[in-house]
Image 1 (cartoon, rainbow, N blue to C red):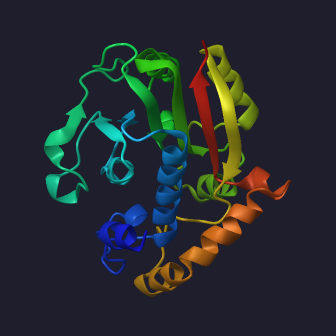
Image 2: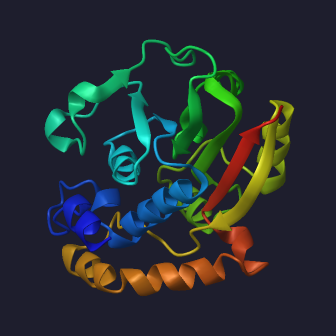
Length: 239
C-alpha cells in the first residue's frame, strides 16, 4: 500500500496538481475501493473501468490481478495519465458502449454515473455489457443531503446537479434488473483538498490514515451519516 500511495501521490505543494490525487485521504479511498473489488472478484476477471479518468483505479485493479478495460468519453493529456494513454478506449457515443453484450464480469463507476447525460440509457448499457450475475460497483455517488453539497450551493460554488438518496438509487437499480447486495453511506469527512493552502494540505496528509479511520466510523452512525457526501453500492445482474 505504501508503494501505491507513493506512486500515485502528486506533489501536494504544487497548485497545478490534481487535488484528488494530492490528498492521501482520497487515495486511501481509492485503495479501499480496489481492495473491496478484489475481495469479490477472482483474479483474471474482466472489469470495465467506466469513465476511467486519469486511470488510477485501472492501475490499482490491475495490480490486484484483474483484467481491466479502461474506457472514457475523452482523454486527459498524456503526461497527466497514470496508465498508458494508448490503452484507453475513447467512446464516440455518450451512452452506447462499444462492447458486445455480456462481455464483463464487473463494471466500475467511480464518480461517473452522476455526470452522464442519459442516466437510464447508461444503466441499460451497463447491464447489457455485464455477464449474467455480473457486478456493478458504484462509488463516490453524491448523496442528496450531503453537507458539502449544501455548503457549495450556499456559497455559489460548483456542486452536483444530480444527487441521490439510498432508497432512490436502490429502486432505480432494481428497475433495471439489478439486485443490490451492499449499500452504505460514506465520506462524512472531506477528502478533496480544494481551497486549502499548501501548508494545510501537507498537515492533512500527515493525519490521512486517522481521518479515514474516523470517517469509516462516523459514516455508520445515524443521523450524522445522513449528511455524508457519498453513497456506495454493489449490485449484481439478476438472472
